[in-house]
Image (cartoon, rainbow, N blue to C red; front, side, top):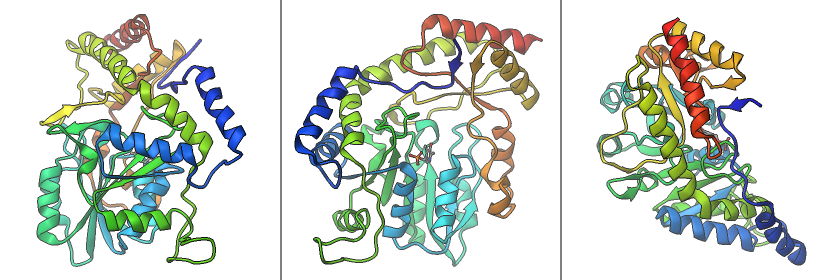
Length: 361
Ligand SMILES: *Cc1c(COP(=O)(O)O)cnc(C)c1O
C-alpha cells in the first residue's frame, strides 16, 4: 500500500457516532448549534485566544477577514503560500503585491516590505509558512508606522506559540484552516481570530448573511457557517491534538537524523517560537533536478511526496508577472515528505533510504 504525503487523522468511530446520537435527538443540524458553540469555546481555550469564529473553510475565513476590515487597494503578500492566500485577495477586489521571502524561514521577508508600500497600500497579508511564525514584530511595527492592517494566513499555525503566546494573537485578524489535510481538522472548516471585540461582532453578522434576528439585517453578509457534523469531528479530534503533535515531532526528528549529513536543507524555525506544531516536513533540495530525481524514486516505490508550494504564486497567469526571485527559485526545490500520525518509524527509514540513494545517483 502506498504512502501519501499526508493522511487525515480519524478518531475512533464510536466517538463520532456518540455525537451523532445527540444530533439525531435534537434534529438541529446547523446555524450555531450546541456542538458549534462547544467547539468554539474549546478552541478558544486550547489556543489561548479571545474571539474565534468557526467558519466553513479557511478560504472564506480569509475573504471575510478582508471584507470585515473593508480593504480595497494593494495588499502586500507572500508569493510562497497556498493559492488561496492570493486568490482571496483578488476575489475580494484587491491587488496582491508580492514581497519576496526570507530564504531561511520561507516566510515573507519583512525587511523588503517598506520598499513595496505605495499610496494605494492598505494591508499586509502574510502566511506563517508550515506553521513557522513570520517576523511578527517587524511586520507589526511597520504596519503601525504606515497605518496598514495586518492579516495572517495562519492555516498551518494551529497551536503554535511565539514568546509563549499564541501566534494567532498577532495582527488585526488571523485565520485558520481545518481542512482534512491540516493538523487539526473538521473535514472542511476554518476559523477567524481577532482580539478586537467590535470586529468579532461584525464578523459574526457577516458569517451569517448579515442576519440580525429572523427579519432584520445588520448589513451585507455571506454564508460562512459550519454545521453540527463538522463541529462533532472537531470535538473528537481536539482532545487528540497534543498527541498528534508529539508523534509528528518524533517522526520529524527521525527524518532530521537521517538527513543531517546530506545536502538536504530544512527551513529555519523563527527565533522565539516557543511551541512548534510539526504540521509538515518540508525539505529544500540542492536543485530542482535533484528534487525531481528524489520524487521519481519515491513515486516508483508508491510514496507520494508533494511539491508544496509550487509554483510560486507570482508566476500565475492572473497575478501580473511581478518578480520574486527567491520564492521562484526555492519553490522549485521544496519537497514535503510524508508526515502524519500513523506513519511508522520504519516507513521514515524506508523513505530516507530511497531519498539518499537518489541523492547519490
Ligand atoms: C489550506 C490552506 C488554505 C485554505 O484553506 P481551506 O480550508 O482549504 O479553504 C489557505 N491558506 C493556506 C496557507 C493553506 O494551507
